[in-house]
Image (tube, rainbow, N blue to C red; front, top):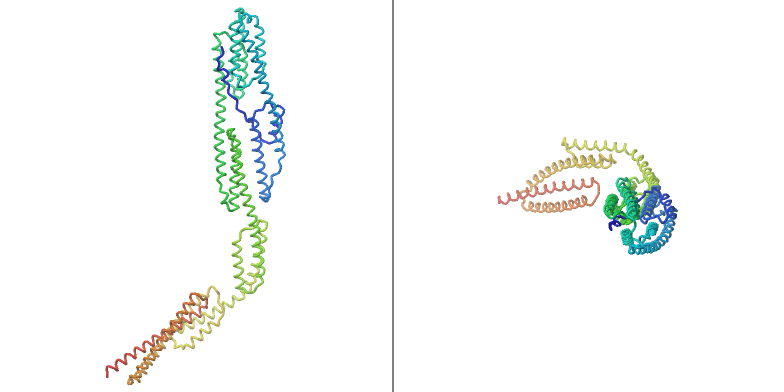
Length: 589
């Protein structure tokens, strides 16, 4: 008797996934399916849909990239209508309609087949339970078995139980059949030969290289094994076990094949998920420059290329992960498009600002106010640097316009300045001669009057400009030697005046009252000098901190302060001299 688990040995075939390299090939396959819709599986239709849109998206991205590389406005890009997509959708709708009709028809046929097979079972059951009729109905049973084989499939939920019932009554019929032993043995022998051949065929399938093909062949062998009549009772378990063992080997290979595919698809899902996370992790809000956008775009394109090299993900996740990938890419390229639209507006605004600077520079280029205009143009140049870029096609023209205006002015200025160069060097020689004269006065200690120094100072001030790089060094040397000469002169004059004062005191020493009046007068002069020095020092502080008056004015004031301090010291010594004489006069009394 056939084991009741025979019908459970089958495993459901998973869909194969042919590879199509073009959209036209996908559409061609759809047109074939329209003609043979009864043989198509849902998994194949899903696979074709995914392949088509993968190729479609890649094509659209390529066209978009080419549009941008050719200088197109990102905001103005409108994808072209894809006629192949229109055809694809039409074919898919036609297949869907035909497939639905076919499936409804098949379901009805399965119900009718079920009824027919149940009728056959009922007839065989009646013969198996009536031994007298069994012997006379042998040929009828053989015809019923043939009719059973020719009837198509039944609803899957009834298949197993129906087969078990049929097999039960067929075997019961043969067990109760009262025919000659020779005829029965012959029938069992022929059935055994057929089933042995089926076992051998099933065992060879274990070596079949194409696992899928081997699985399909096994299904046919199973159907033949089922339809074959019984064998001798003592051989039934043995022959079924042999066939079942061979089937198990083929089924395990088939199962392992799809487990391998499943593992590979799981790895592919992990890779695709990582790509989605990478693109989703790009912080588009903080990308603020075109070079960074271009760098990140190249990275996304590389990830898209990598995506295309990865195989399918598990069927239940394949569409979802692709939709996630597409959404991440769309978000990135939408943000990029918005950035470059804003950048285009900024470029236009920058062009307006730079054009305005060109106009200002052109208005100034003919000016002969060299210092003021130089400063103004330098300010314009600095302002130019603060303005961002303009469109590439405008950049050279606006820059050349601005530079031309600036260069024209500075070239005219250079022509004038070059004529002043020789004059400045002549002035440098004159001032160096004045310094040498002052050095002679200082080193030889010539008795010089203040008028002589003032004459040299006046001559210095009347000499024009010297080369700019020599100006500060030359003036520092002049100031130091002039201060030294004045210091020497003040010291000599002070000493003379003090000696003269002492001589005059000797003449007036007998008159004590006169000495006291003289001391009061000198003390008032001393206090006035202190006040005057304080005033000058305040003025010096003001000039040093908030004024850009010439160095000559500062030096002149400082020399006055020094002279006043020397005079103040002289007054102090005169007062001390008077105090000494007054004290001596008091002691003598």
